[in-house]
Structure formats: structure tokens, C-alpha cells
Image 1 (cartoon, rainbow, N blue to C red):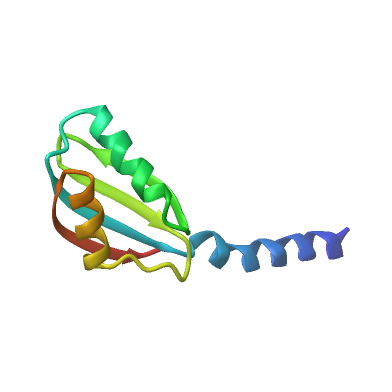
Image 2 (image 1 turned 30 degrees about the horizontal axis):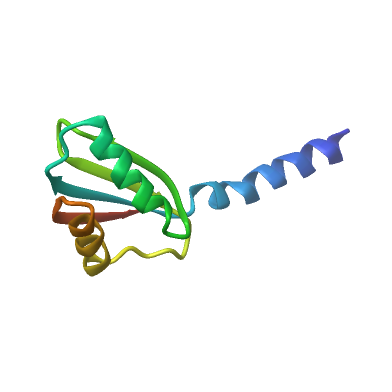
Length: 97
């Protein structure tokens, strides 16, 4: 029984870095006014391989994107994506998770 508990604890400790892996990007965007706008952005971002979660805050003009470990979003890529969607990309911050 002690071996089983020890094994489970070791598995839990080894899995923590895997759960925390990835990067979160927070982008400031002008022109986000309604849920339909948010849906259009989400649809474009979901086409990028490795995008795991997307949150849009219409009131603050923020798009928050969580990507898998090893996936990198660039300023150039996001500028073009938002321009193609009819919005103005302003800035992006990156935070490792």
C-alpha cells in the first residue's frame, strides 16, 4: 500500500510541469464591439496549430490566447491576422505558464 501511495505521489509531482507548460499571450485590439466580433477572432485563432484556449474581453479590447509549449505567436503574424479580420492590433504581451 505504501508503494502504491509513493508511486501515485511521484506521478503527481512529475505531471505538474506538464500541466503548467505553455504560454499565454494578451493582445490589445481596437474595434472589438460585440460577441460576433469575438467569434470571428476566435475562429481565426483556432486555425493556428497549438492554440489551446481563447478568451475575449470586449470591454477592455483584450484577446487572451493560451498556446501549447513550443508554440510562438509573433507580432507580424498577429498584426496580419487582426487586419484580415477587420480589427486594429495594438500590442501583445507574453507570459510563460
